[in-house]
Length: 372
Image (cartoon, rainbow, N blue to C red; front, top):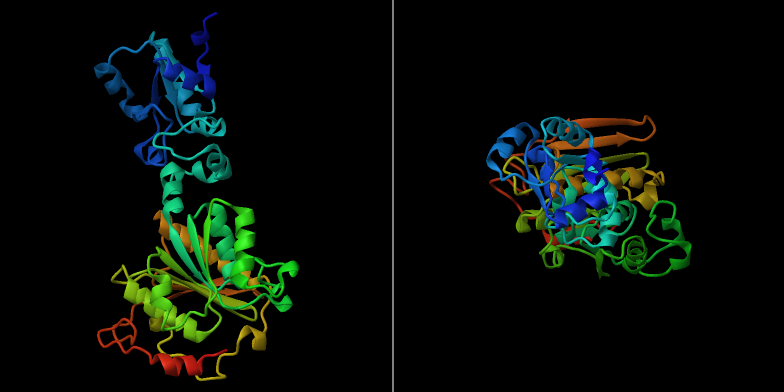
């Protein structure tokens, strides 16, 4: 019995056959193939297979591959009924990736293919999307309650560089919600503690640390050169400085805030003409004492986790150009009612931040006002 008598072939044997001269056809749609193809494969939509056969030189063996091996098996059986030597790659591209076989244009090593295997199987991500993440630089302002889950999941997803900006040290009272840190690291700089945790999770992600307090004077210098900004600040001076730098540098800002049992998330993207900015939502900072800090008001420990994960989700969507980001929308979360609400947040033509008559905030006055 010839090895070609079987309508299916395993992924490793298929790779060996391709190296020996067999023709490998990826019969998925162009949208699916955009997520990555097996090395050596030619892309041919299943509906265009007959047209390809009519013009292509006769191959000694055709190998067909799809996502999980079902479409390719049906196509291979149809071709075999016509006397054409064809086999389907059993398990499809999923089996190819699981076997650690190379992908077209794939410079991922075995560690990366295993580490990001579930993500690589998403057609909208694939090898190209993973490469985009590896090239990305994300600034995380604040290594506390919001910065913890955001940084953890961005590192886990394979974001190439995370810049952590925080001048604080780990306190025992942080540990109830700031899950980047541990009891053993109480008293150490938060950025150093966070870097240790993130390196342990994914040593492939490069961590840059800045043990400084971000303000209007240093924001642009700290944030320039990144692809997007994560707002995990715990004071209004830093938050307004991030908002101003977002506009000045043309970088998306992913906003998040928590208090007691509620939180909110939005995305401000100055690259889009219809996007509001942070000051469309909060034109001016509150007077001293009007907005209590977490230390004063308290916060349910899991709440920053929920909001931080939403921020991480929005970051990945922007980096991968997926879905509909929260631009022009404010997402509100009530933990006690377990309810999400969404409010429209249009750009304000008279916004003091991004409007025609923008009015920059006085940096020193803001710093004096917002120390909590």
